[in-house]
Length: 217
Image (cartoon, rainbow, N blue to C red; front, side):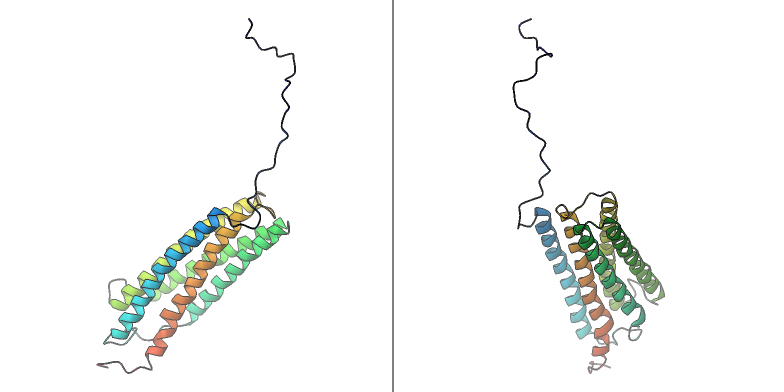
């Protein structure tokens, strides 16, 4: 047959050499980085509305705020330090990857995940110890709504960190291909910064409100 292919003859077309996978344009942020930044802007607006609602309703309240007395700072301070430390270890993971120190990177990310889980555990203990619930009164609704939304973001962040931990251990990242670490770390740092605002609002401002002269008290 005239159309038959002669497998014994080598092809005259040149074979292109294998090319390395693209690593993105030098000096430019990846699309995922900008997407995560947009997500942070929208979620930051959500928490901003919640915190504003808390402060506004607290200023209009005719009762003691919180109704059960001033919040205890011990667990809140401990959780703040834990979450900030976790953010530091996540940042170190990327630094170690860029220096090709994979074992240190895996260990650093693992510590960050453990600290994040510790934050959740302490927050749940604190929820359990409160004598009020979500529908008990206005303060309880605001407290559990704000901390509950933040807890949901922490859980999502831990899932992201676990995936990054797995990929780091499998050697998926190096000094050129670590955009996922940067993007995941950016989200986790956002969760930590939000907690600083929540801690200042829920735990510290009641001590300032105590100094005010509330109507009807």
